[in-house]
Image (tube, rainbow, N blue to C red):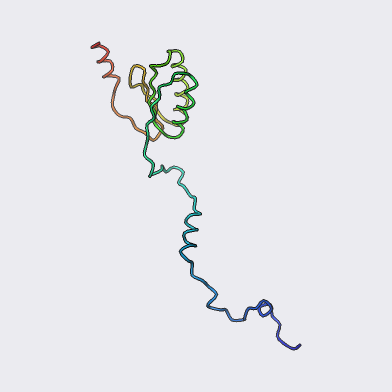
Length: 139
């Protein structure tokens, strides 16, 4: 049993590197690696998704949870309090003030019992309060 023993020979590999061993990546491998990437920018917004404004007309204080959830999902909301009594509406506005503060947004009165709540990525321009007082004076 005279012969040269090496691990490469034992496992069926020759001493010289085989050039045909390396394979080019296929289209399926490239597609799999693209699908596996789940990197999303933290501060970036979804470019394919349209901005939405939700309209609410709460009747009970418990409706505030659904309204706040919309704000937390970066949606602007318009809340009409004409169907609520004044005490419950004040409590809802207080809750929404806290939610708006948490998302670094804003809340503005746009009507007698209508409020606009926006998250940080919305900008509201104009002055409605001057127009509202003019309309109330004419009535």
